[in-house]
Image (cartoon, rainbow, N blue to C red; front, side, top):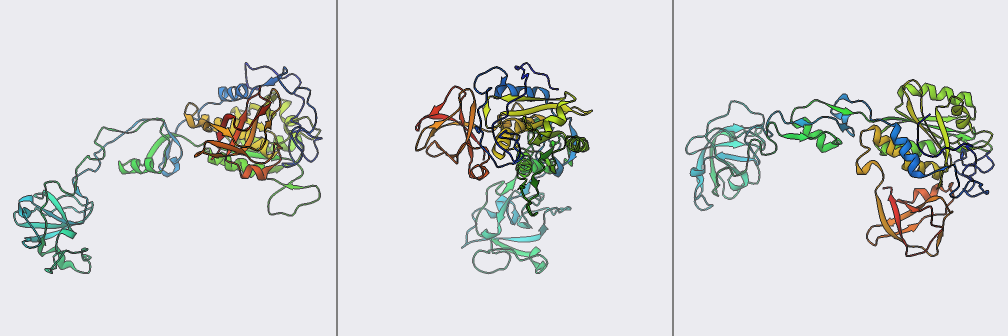
Length: 476
């Protein structure tokens, strides 16, 4: 069981009042779409003893979740991971002076005063392609045809773009392009007419102009996205030491659940929670594994969890955490004392479970089963746990960004006393307003799909009038 200084929950009773197919109105929520959170009176609702606050539960989770041990990964495998060491630049980037244009490498004095009427006529002594070695030396009255990224040959001081020349054709006017070397090898010799002068170092990218040897390329704590992966490759790093992306296993429970794509039997519904939560885990930066729904049998669930421990850094279950006769998550995980089931002063998502299980003390978060309850619980507790495993607990993006917005609604919103309520909404950043989407029912998954924010109503507030400013969690 996880340790905590938060108030104990001696009875572990009273569900969230949210129905599922066979829970008499509790929020074990296997049904993932039935009932409403306030379907029956709850003797422990409000600021009574035994309720954990949202903040207490989150603190308890984060206190127990430690960052994963660092490992060495290939660059592409490290995408999305957190760097655990400073990376310095071993060689300058670029490592040599090179051309930023396709054109001709020249000496400045040879093109001084050049114009279309009186072009500078230079002898072409060869080609310098990207990756070329054995560079020709450019002497007085000479030029080398040079390609973008190719090293500046000795003797050359600047590059004139091909558009400033006749391209070596001897024709009037500016060239639009170079002829391919394979089709016109004679372009690497002969003469070129330059129509404009060039200053020293024109169109030359200097050695070390991006980064210099010994400079800090990336600091420890950097999340590796595509630009960072590109930089590591550019300075020659093939592997990097990071905290790996957490492996999150999502398990739905409920005998009434059927997998999407299969026919529905009598009394059955489709399993949506495992898909939503696995997608949410990926969105948070984890590697997600979805386990098909486990039937309402405690032994089957224990076996399923034990089987998954070998590949899990975090296990998330959904459903079966209330007080119904078939709430198997609570039944299966209470006996050994590793998981603590508690009631939170929040709506939706009152019943929650948390503990460290198995020989490696793998964190397990047991969420309610109604779709909105499980998703809100994920955002509040699982997402921060994933970020903590990645070593990002102290970063602002460990949790969803929170802003203040003005309520845009036709009527006041009600909220139960003593509970922090999270309502689905649409946030308008331009006007600074937020509008509720759908009702308060924890089964309204369609409304959740059209929301991009959660309106947060504090525990002490029972009504929010239109025009009131309140906190909003941004989901997108």
